[in-house]
Length: 140
Image 1: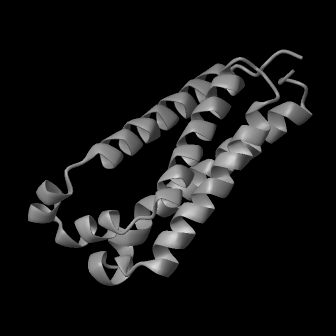
Image 2: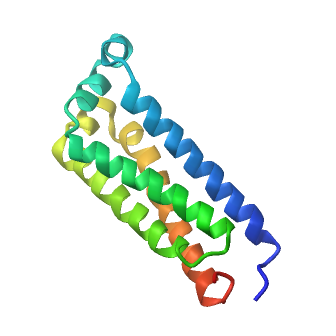
């Protein structure tokens, strides 16, 4: 089956979004916590306390999303499980952050939750879109 006209545009937007996620991961992983502490001591405290497994989970979320977007653009069925893996990793990541840290007390509920909610919603949209395109026969 041929892809809808909007398919390529949506796949490219997903790819760009996930490239931004990869860039964000790299910047956060490599950031100087002493410099961050000068402007955002609470944020520096939270990043300093992140366990290694959470950084690994973050990497999985980002790389699986990027892989899903690439496979979607290539019209490959592998996009579906990769987007699902990314979604699961996002839930684990933010679940830990909201349960095991005091980020809401430090940042406030709106600042602490707005972008994670956006990331979660986009992860669901990516997975559902890929699932729908697979069901329509667009993905091979």
